[in-house]
Length: 301
Image (cartoon, rainbow, N blue to C red; front, side, top):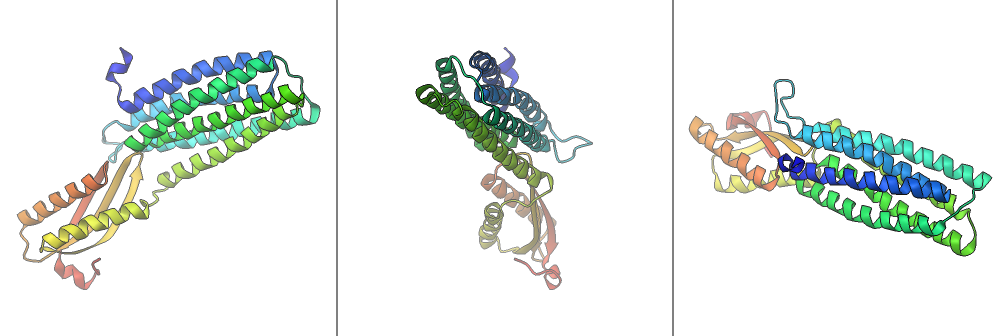
């Protein structure tokens, strides 16, 4: 089977692609039959979700490729690029939805078969809630930015579809068809906000933003704890850390007593690297060793 050679991230995205394709077809048919701009807006949103899911699948497959001569630090940033792509796609979708909603608020629209639209939107909300929860859970487990982007993308579909169902129900009960484009406008705003979040989170990594303070404190704590049991360690400085997709890259200077032998220094370095990797998974750790004579020039931490 196709799924046999795929890892957990790829299988999760493939499932998302399948659900998006089915929901796109159902929403499009329902939107055309009902004439609802909010249902059609959700169909367009599902179409972009489908494209974004394919991009996410390519990204997670490519990001798992090992480092090569042209990409010494691996291919993790393919996931961040996928997040930026999804964000810009959502900006376009959000703008299109808002434009259509305002046009229908101004000019009005006729709605038919509202019951069908309500059922389709309610079903879509339930399906996307399940899929988005799964995507975000796997994203947390694998620290995948591509899956996170995909999960938040589908989360907007959950609220969007639920909002459309409520709006159509209101229109059916009261006869106020203007509720349909108003709900569509709210969906557009939600999509634009999600787009901003995705682009912001992904570009920070692409610009080599440092790891969060909490993760830097973990590195400092591990070093300090090991220094208590290893008397050869005098201190450390020049701690730097960044991310590339799910991979963390950490480097710092470790100061040892001048009389420490090369073999002892190598063992200390290996042990410390392993402890950091246990505390922060998916970490590539590089330690530059110095003797304590450098303390006169570079204050240790």
